[in-house]
Amino acid sequence: MKILYVLNSSKYGGMENHVLDLVREMKKRGHDIFVFCPQGEMLKKYENCGALVTEKYIKKDIDFEFIEDLRKFVNEKEIDIVHSHELKAVCNSLIACRKSKVKAVVTHTHTPISEWQVNPFKKFFDIKIYSHLVNKYSDAEIALTESKKKVKIKEGIKEEKLVVIPNGLDMSKFEISDEKKSEYRKEIKHKFSIPEEAFVFGNMGRITREKGHEILIKAFANFLNLKNLSEYDKKNSYLLIAGGGVLEDKIRDLAKDLEIEKNVIITGKFEDEEKIKYLSSFDIFLFPTLAEGFGIVLTESLSLGIPTICSDLDVLKEVGDGFVSFFKTGDEKELANTMLNEYNKVRNLKKSGDFFISGAKKYVKENYSMEKFAENYEFLYKKLSEKKR
Image (cartoon, rainbow, N blue to C red; front, top):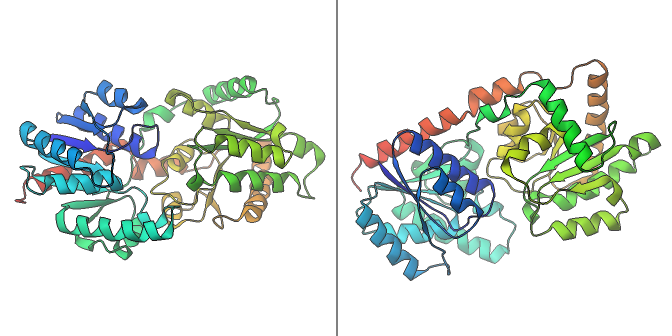
C-alpha cells in the first residue's frame, strides 16, 4: 500500500512520535510511506525511517492552498490511505480527499477536543466542525482507549466510525539489566549534582499547560512542608523534570517563588536515547497531567517497574490497570499526600531489596507491544483499502 501521514507539527511530542512509530513499522512491513509535515526536528527522523517527506504547513484553519496541494499529491502518487492527525490536519485532509482517488482516510485527534485546555467557545466550535467532517468524510476515527472512544461518542462522532487501537511501546529499548539501571542512575545524579543518597521524584514530558507542571511544583512544595517528614528526608528529596517547553521559565520561577528551587531540576530538551537514563534515575514517577490521549510515558515507566503516581483520568486508569497510585486530577494537596504514602512504601521496599513493581513489565508487553500496534494498523488499512469509497 501507499500510505500518507498528514500532521501540522514536527516538534518532539507524543503525537509526532506516534507517527514516527507508524512510519517505521509500516515501512518494515513493505509499504511505501509518505509524510506531509512542517519543518522541524521530527521531519528528519521520518526521512531516516524511509518516508518520502513533503514539507507543508497549514497556515489557516481551512487552508485552500494546502488542500489543493494535498489533493494533487494524493492523485499523482496514487495514495491508498491518508492518515491525518489532530484538528487542522484532519479537517484539511478530509476536505482535500473528498473527490480524490484515495481509497480511505483515517483520522485521529489523540486527546479528544473536549479535554483540551482552550477557550470554551473555541472548544465548542471545534468539536462541532470536527465531528461533522469526520462523520461525513472519514472512513475511520481512531480512539486510543475504550474510555477515549466514549468521550468521542459524547462529542458527536458516530460509534461505527470509531476504532480503538492503543499506542505501542518498543520494549527492546527498555530491556536493560539492574546493573545498567544503576549505572544510568549514578550518571544522571552526577550530571545534575544530585546527592548519591537522594530520593528522586521524576517527571518526563513537554512542559505545557495540559501536562500539569504547575500542580507538580506546588505538590512537591507541599510534600516538603509535611510535618511527618524529617528534615533529612526534606533535604534529600529532589524533583527531576526531564523535558522543556513553552512554560519552562514559568515553572522555574514558580519553584523560586515557593523557595524549593534547590531541590527542583529541569533538564530542558534532551535526546530520545537519554530517556531510558532519566527513567532509571526516578525512584517514583509523577504524572499529574490534566488531559491525555493515552499516556505512552506511563507504559514506559511501568515497563521499568517504576512506582508511579498519576492523575485519576479515566484513560490513565485504563492504561495503568492496577499498577499505579492515583490522585484527584488537579489537586496538589492530595498529590503531596499520595507522594508521602508512596515515598514510605518505596523506602521500605528498598530496605528489603525489592524496588520494582512486580508484573508491570509483563503487563505492558502483553497489552502494548509495538508488534501488536503495527498489526492493528496494518489490518485496518487493508480492510479500508478494500472498500469502495
